[in-house]
Each structure stands twice: as C-alpha cells, then as structure tokens.
Amino acid sequence: VQLQASGGGLAQAGGSLRLSCSASGGTFNPNTRNTRAWFRQAPGKEREFVAAIRMNSGTEYYSDSVKGRFSISRDNAKNTVYLQMSSLKPEDTAVYYCAAGNGVITSNTYNDRAYNYWGQGTLVTVSS
Image: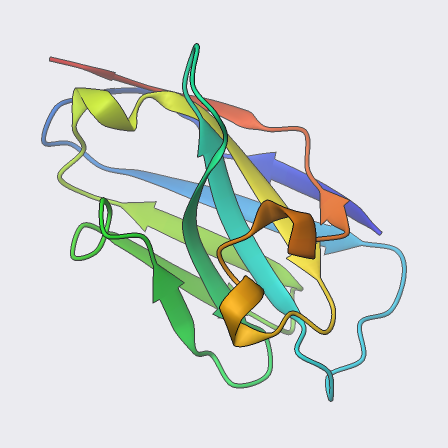
C-alpha cells in the first residue's frame, strides 16, 4: 500500500489549508478496523497524533490541540482521506504525515505504532 500526501504549503495565522491522502495498491478489508490518520512532527519535537477516521464507520478522532479547528473526512470511492485545517496557528507548523492501518483498536488510535503504512509527509508552514 502506498500513501500519497499532498496539499501542504504556506498559510497565514487564521487561514486554512486542506491536506489529502490517497492510497493505492493493496486491499483494505472493509470489515476490519481500517483506520486512516494524520500525524505531524514539528522541528525538534516528537511526532504527534492529529486526527484519525475509521474508513467503514466514519468515526472521527482528534487531538485536543486541533479539536474544533481541524476536520477529517474520507471518500471511500477514491480511497482518499482529507484533513481540513482552519483557524491555523503558528504552532501548527510541521510536516504532516498520513498513515493507515488495519485492526487499529480504539485505545491505539492515537499511537503511531498502530499504523502499518505511512506517506512521505507534506510540510505545513503557518506564519504569524
């Protein structure tokens, strides 16, 4: 499975960006806890969870730092997940990675070790 992330760029504080993560190759069993997620890593910091979505049910998960500002969605027909980022802050500046995993239980949704596949990352820079 290959994941391709896109949509990063430069935005001003208070602005918006939308990231996309498309998947190709492999087969995800729709009956498993197939989950797609976004993580981010800022310079000098550890990678952190941003948001996730169950591809079959659409259940969404967010970190406290982005809740209410970011929205994750999916298009199963296109095997693509989106991250709509609004009210951006300079502290949102990071490389954003999309990830995918099967059989991700709820308690592991926020753990990057639960995901088997990773995209290459896309840089988001928010200026003040």
